[in-house]
Amino acid sequence: MAVVAVTAALALTTAACSGKKAATSTTTLPSGPTLMQQSEAAMATVQTVHFAIAVDGTLPGLPLSKADGDLKASGDAKGSANISEFGVNVEVEFIIANKTFYLKGVTGGYSPMPLSTASSILDPSAILDPNRGVVQLMKTAKNPTTEAIESVNGHDAYRVAVTPDPVAIKSLVPGSGAGTTGKIWIDTTTHRLSKGVFTVPGSGSNKGATVTITLTNYNAPVTVNAP
Image 1 (cartoon, rainbow, N blue to C red):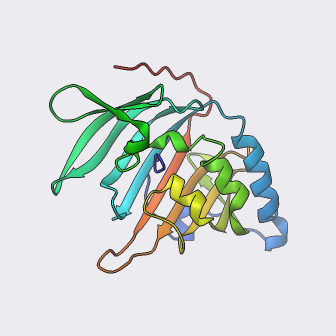
Image 2 (image 1 turned 135 degrees about the vertical axis):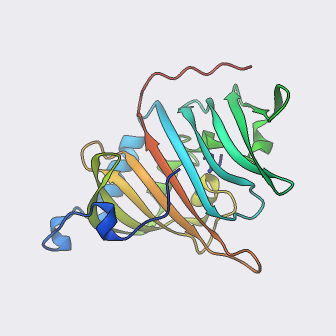
Image 3 (image 1 turned 90 degrees about the vertical axis):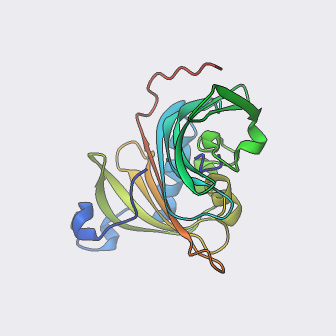
């Protein structure tokens, strides 16, 4: 998905709760553009990843509240998600295999649909897609500014504030676009993306949302079979 495809975690908390490390000044931290280039290169080589996505609020046209699963660079994926159906929150299972999206609801088996139509529900295949995923986010984000070093999933990561490109972020987070702001955490050792938190502004009666995407278990074995 677009992630929304792909992500789950919560919105950014205060620095005191986030494990922020002291720095004498911002000059002790790598520059934002340098980190983005390093992360772009590192993410381009990723073969598999575990993703968790959490939506705090409402994204236009997207019923997703959270998702959790495993993803391959080919776009194949499997996992579970919580979506809203007729105002009721339900948990579903999904498989993406050979460009086909399979969805299993509370009852019955898996129902296939074209992957192109799945973005209205969930399409995490965008995350590792070099043309529309994290690599594009790193390549096109504006004004990257390194703010701190914080612990994410037990590993140190640089927190970088960014202004995502509207097209790139919409591929990852459907319903987002112009006006979306973000903070991303880049592992200090591997330069892979540890987490991204994106704030999508509201419009009209929609109050907007905060979307958190967390990536772990890089390059672990993942097997995905069509149902």
